[in-house]
Image (tube, rainbow, N blue to C red; front, side):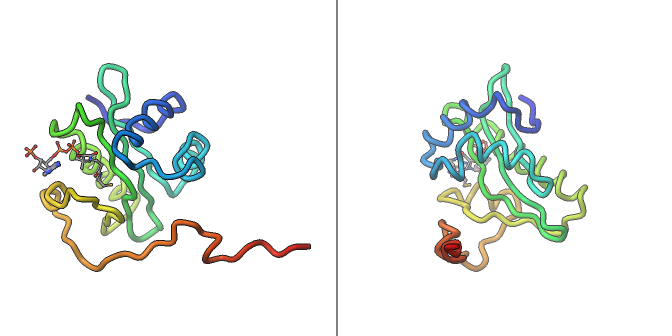
Length: 143
Ligand SMILES: CC(C)(COP(=O)(O)OP(=O)(O)OC[C@H]1O[C@@H](n2cnc3c(N)ncnc32)[C@H](O)[C@@H]1OP(=O)(O)O)[C@@H](O)C(=O)NCCC(=O)NCCS
């Protein structure tokens, strides 16, 4: 198993994993185009776990110049409990630390608090999220 950066050819297997794990939101945020945008974004980190040439897990996160944040970790169900999730988070922590990050948070720990606790994360305040940015920013002005 190796952890590497996302590649274009990962889109289909990663979308299949997200769908199976009920983590696929809408195509605008999670589809192939979004994946390409994340890959191209200098603040983002998009890691893939590969086994026998196939993507079996992913991690997406971001570093804002001070703090780092993991948005999602997802491992193919038939590959879970084999250390892949842990390897993804540890590699993300190393990469963010290299960039200068001093802390690391996860926005959606899901039901697997034991997984995060083993990695030294502690439950703090609840996070509020607006899943549609238009609801916050308002619609574009009509000309
Ligand atoms: C959470 C998830 C990423 C963990 O990945 P993984 O590769 O299975 O995790 P690891 O094998 O590295 O697990 C390390 C340890 O975390 C704990 N752990 C992991 N999954 C767990 C679970 N479902 N229930 C309880 N403890 C769990 C265990 O202590 C495990 O060690 P053990 O297998 O020796 O008991 C994976 O289960 C997953 O993709 N789940 C669905 C999506 C999700 O909830 N993602 C997290 C929110 S973004």
